[in-house]
Image (cartoon, rainbow, N blue to C red; front, side, top):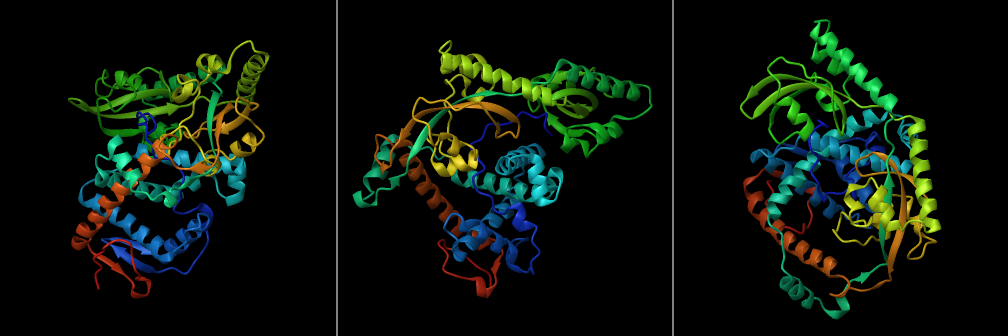
Length: 449
């Protein structure tokens, strides 16, 4: 339900268990392992092996152990009543679709490559994403409070032999100035008029909120349920939506109102103190080619002013950028996988395939020309990238690589927590692996015969 507040998370799309292309292949399949009620299929292992080949780590034993561990996390989530919301799944799906669209260059090229519409691909991928998010939540529970002190980081670093210190590849620090296309006044008015027409039809008894939501709402998740959102507590909605929903009387239809997601009408179905059931219709104005052209022209003008020296890049970011995450920090980008400001080529290619060729001929201080890209939220935009610095390859040290070393120490701690959890919980969970797939696992598993 896209009207819910989106939580900021460090979870980033770096690794996909399966790709659409691999999933679409027809293979002779069978169950090779079972964890609780969750099977691991031979195709799961084959696809994961192919997926890991690009990382140079396609060891069958390691990959199978990872898949069994993921199923164990999901099975434990069932026992502990851990859930993920439709909104969390939808948000993650949108992020992944943005990644795939970025890889292929456009939504049309993605659909042509797979021979399927984007919404069909999303529906096929939805169960996998839901399972992955459940596993992530259980993993977070196992890790608990993973904070680590500077003293612990120094102690960890002192245990690494000099000849075992990792070699850090070349990295860059980046800044960006983002402009996103906005809806025209005409598109907004047309959208509000449509919603007012739907509201009139509902009030006159010519149709119902449920029927119109199924037919027309842009909230894909709730539309399937006639626009119904049940058991929503105060604080769960964005403020504009909540203000309207909690003022209504049962059966009352709101006037048209706006949130960051678009325009809505809401019907209060029931209220139980601070919990409500509501139906709503969301309509989002449509972006036209003119909106995209206008956005690109705005950024081109800003770029020209920066190049002329009329305004600095940093001042332009604070004044004009639409990227709330970096606007107050002069546009400085943060690596979501490490929480540092450094990016290596691997993450750059996954975050935005255009970045590496764009940066190849730049030196610190250079600006890229404005270009189109998709944000992690799946929304299109245009941006200018500034190369702040390049960090040459070097052996890890506490001065330059504290964040990385801290992450290594945290991973070591989390691995121990994971090993202890597997050893304890596998004793009380049904886990069966076909004999020909059993091997020397890294963790201490209790496997049923």
